[in-house]
Length: 327
Image (tube, rainbow, N blue to C red):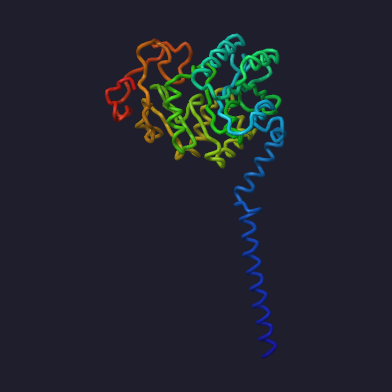
């Protein structure tokens, strides 16, 4: 009997030790280096992607250039893609340069303390880049090939600052659209909030959740999603699904589901739709005194005849300005 009791006691002690070991290992599995399991492997995956793309080097730690890196942290960025007729026959070199010069001019008046990042391919000569950067201190050119990121679709290059930890706030914009006071008023209203993502819809045809050239993001307010955004951009297998004009599809399928509960939206026409129900009216009344800049995101020269702007729905007007038929 004594021997049996001793055996049972040893088994009991052994079981207790095994149970303790299982609990300990479970905790270690769930938390590695003090991080939740998902985040640990998530960060490892991102680091591997970044290493493959040479993004961890000092030169490209801002997902742009050495010059951009030396600007330090808390950068305010206007981000555009500049590509040539190879990607789209419409964008001849002459046309693109004309639009770029106009955009730089807009930035001086609309976003004077911001930096313009121009993501480009090898069609842009170094001499042209030097001439622009020497003349305009707040313009940074980001060579997509030098960063080994040429597999990313050109229209999506401009999204890269969303994953840049040196960026305080970024706005993705179109090369051929002006930067307007109406847009700025909406951006400033967003920046007063604690919401990380911003979208604008300012035309009857702006019926999608996120327009590729009309959104903004504050990486520091949502660093976990900033990393997720970057992972998706760096994923070669994912990128190939969004080639050509796929930037819009990428935002709707890969980004919108992640930020729809953390978005500040300005919407003039779709405030009652599935993705517009949480939106706000634009803080300024649409100008009808001239025929230019009639809506945010318009294609230069932005004439009234080509815009087809109609009266905005009463529900989409500011509460204190229901008389703004052109809201």
